[in-house]
Length: 188
Image 1: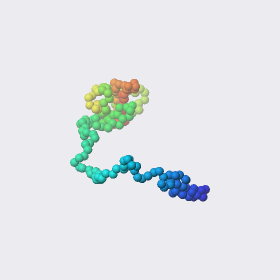
Image 2: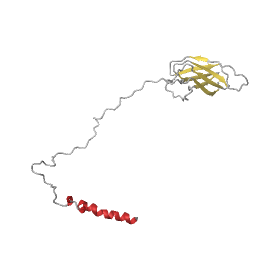
Image 3: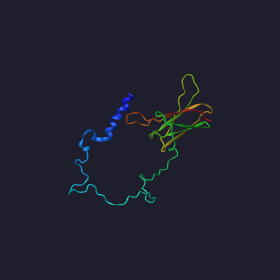
Image 4: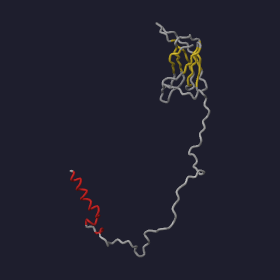
């Protein structure tokens, strides 16, 4: 195998160096029909004109291209609209700030819906659970809606529930997010 790898290139070398003349072609012999001199009455094959070299391009600071996009200016944003909300798709995100006997609840406005909120006590109770007292909240006009639940006991754990009954539906019939809940919070 090694011998073949060495012999084949050595056999091809004379053919490559000798060209077509080694194979008996008439194109390899001098004095054939081709001639380097032009035929009488024919034009020159190559026209050479004198000239000067093209200069290299030089960047000019005064002649720069205009920007592709126009300058951008942003409209002022209400602070509540600039807040990043952690969104869990089926739930409306809410923030709860505890106060003295109260909880202040804030959430992003959802599709011009009205709302209702309640604070549910979390201690274990045997038997029937007490009825919830819902507080009605209008839709609001800003990016966020804020409401305060009062009359709560200090040190008692609560979970805040939010309901938005009129959020509407997507084009496929699925409801927009219509409820939210907080983690456990304690009024001060």
